[in-house]
Picture: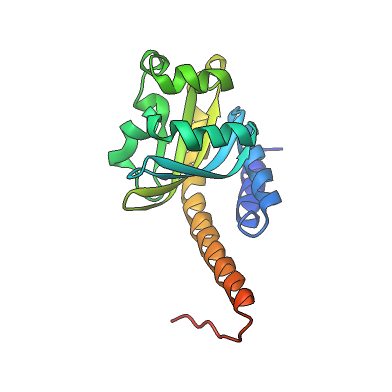
Length: 194
């Protein structure tokens, strides 16, 4: 299969993943394979409260994502360094802002990343509203080195689609929440947009 074929499959799974979490998982696994990453996740980070939520993850288990949410969201040096540059649709490669030596001196690395064999990370911001942002994040081990060349090109091509897909995903979540409350009210109601 060619890079273009892989790209088309990734986009189909990304947009299909808006309504189907299995397809989102397939998209994450496919993007991990295309970039030699062993972890992929959707991450919502609240910079004001130093908290996070990981609604979808591949490559590590739920307990590790809960550990990040509970203990390490405030210690993510990659986010700390990228914060002034994070905006909807932006791409951030951890190695561009933090050296390997500096990362390895942090509590975040010593007490968390090291045990997951993570030394390199990238993030695509799907949405930034004030101090909250949603990311597609990929991570990989030290032995594979920093993301380079074709991997960076692929991520740059995926970035605007991730921002579009995340906007759709956020709207779908909002509609699901409204529908949930309507069912609980047991009353009829029409929802009209503009």
